[in-house]
Image 1 (cartoon, rainbow, N blue to C red):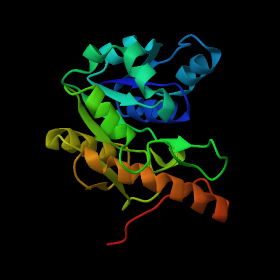
Image 2 (image 1 turned 90 degrees about the horizontal axis):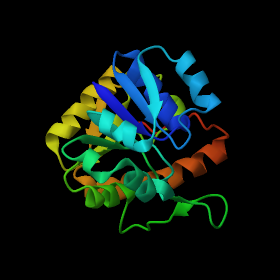
Image 3 (image 1 turned 180 degrees about the horizontal axis):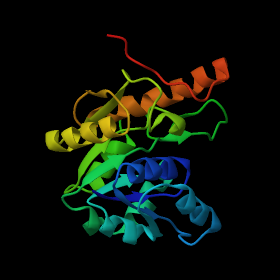
Length: 212
């Protein structure tokens, strides 16, 4: 599979490396695709990787991962070109964390909307699945627990089946599907709680797991 990733931060580089290491072709989209940091990343990662603009990455990918700051999703999608998302699986990893009042954060979307829903409204012809947003980037690939399941949601059943296969490739047992993309608000709402737990335990590598 060809994967286009919008973003060049820790989440983008972690997932990019994970996809590439399992035989997928990865193009990272960045405002600075020729930066030294990305050159170093490409040398360190095993597999087929390249960098380009947001539009380059979006047009390249059979699947597209949105891994930018939550406040930057509109700009990132506009730079990528909405037409480049049509009919594609779009994995949304973003969070609406609001640090305007300091730590711990709230949600700038409130509890009546979410970034997952905003992305689906902006890209009505895309197949958006919320995924990866509830765990730290250190756990996204090979989470360290072979029985761990990822929380996901989205409107398209086939897109969610694709994401479950991707998760298994990356070392997850599978996924817990909580419903349509409207449920993204609750996945995003779990993250301010996760921050509070991380602060309390002084452990930013932790994640929630459902025991059942």
